Length: 329
Image 1 (cartoon, one colour):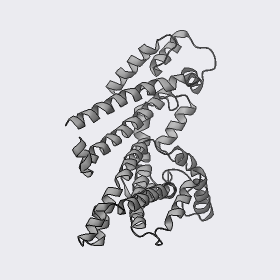
Image 2 (cartoon, rainbow, N blue to C red):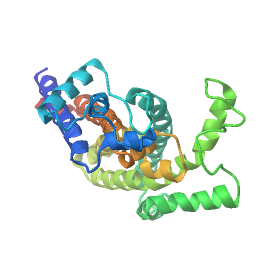
Image 3 (cartoon, one colour):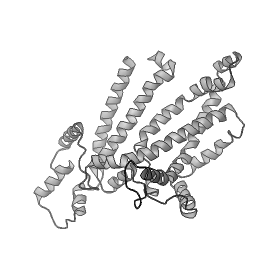
Image 4 (tube, rainbow, N blue to C red):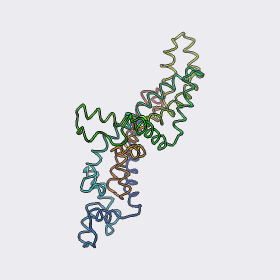
């Protein structure tokens, strides 16, 4: 219990530090969100000081207010679940924008990350167990896709499979002309069809790292003394591979997978930009271009919580997966 309490306390402190940076970084950026909102509303002439003060209060900024005052109000609003009003999507609230875009990113990036992890770890296990086989020779091919610039790979697949062969749509998240959002089969089929090419790009660009890491850990694990003991007991090769070799070799990959799951919420800005996908990465890019403090802070907050939560979860799971960690705790 002391180990769990220490871990939770550490992550609470890390969350507070992240929230503080989340508050400060957007305010260090050049530009004034009040002027941007006024331009967005079509205001060309000067505005009264009272009107400017009202907009500053709405956005949580203001040159007349101290940074400490803004920080206290920021923490108070977070405690109430109020993330503010978005400038780039005015008059929608930040919570509404996140609620609309987050499911798209989790569905696309999350599923793609999970598929690439399973394929990479599975192929890496077989490659390390059967060194020199054709599966082992796949490692250079998969790592080649990982070394290719991500946006270039996305553009190539978009040109070949989307524009050239017309197998997939070129942009968007679903067919806006024939389907309407909802839990109905035509819409879900359209979402899967439109997301297939972005998902393929993510899987191809990430599977090599999982496969190479798992393959190297398998090779290292196979040289351990307990592997020789398992073989001397006459255990079946499949059981030795799964229960002894793969179970110990997969531990570093699990840590990496937990971090990847945390960053799923961040989305892939490049993927969503190339394919015009309506995820949270596109919303973050729009917020940065518009100096939208509130939306940037809201998205960063969700990313921070997801990353810290994923790392806390894997730290606690380590005590179950690896008995040595439980002994040290």
